[in-house]
Image (tube, rainbow, N blue to C red):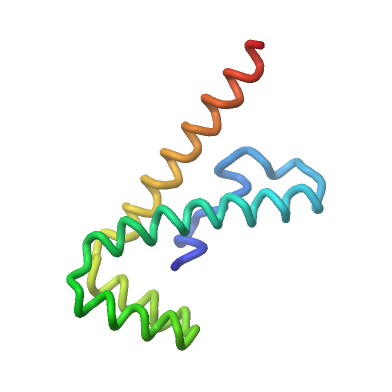
Length: 103
């Protein structure tokens, strides 16, 4: 699944660009994993069974370029979906941060 939508910087989006390099790397990987998991679920829910099988083959082949082309062809609004998932996760993280800071 796409780790980056053109013009999108995960660390900057989440306000984490000023952290140490070690912390950045760890947090970035965790955020990407959550986003990709959610993105995968949404995409899989939109695909008919035959397309899911084709996507599985692409995943097994580990060819991210072909996989991204396939997703773009089958789900034209995938960039918007990805952005919405990121926005939702960011909102969730801010709510958690606010709840922790109020204690």
